[in-house]
Length: 154
Image (cartoon, rainbow, N blue to C red):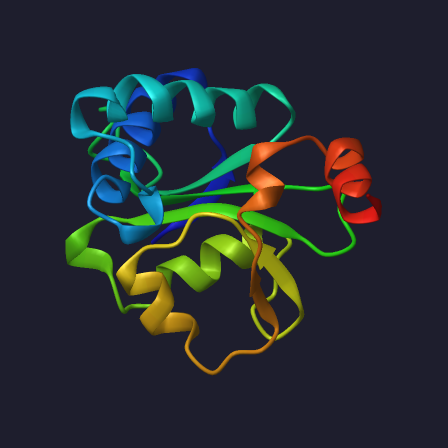
């Protein structure tokens, strides 16, 4: 039985490493050379977390090992016109079983309702194809809410 909860400090090394590894070969990672990738994106992700993004994990209750009990996780942020999803990661064996949608629901994001997302990978593009309620807005990962509002106005 899978349960959902906000991430704990013991979960964060797995969240960070899986985010970095799974995003590294995405075209959306831009022109950043591989030798700079980990340092730059580790800092960028940490800034998202520090500004109030919340990570929710799908886990198996009763398991004690930090990595083994996590099926996946979702990083979301509030304070925008629509829910903002930065990243969703599900371990390979549990993909296409509804874990990602359940994680998002646990985080208060309903995929049938409008939402923004900032990090794009090939699987995300495939899963969201034709869903007009999901709007890719990477600029929202680059600045806080007030800064994003100023850039739209200016």
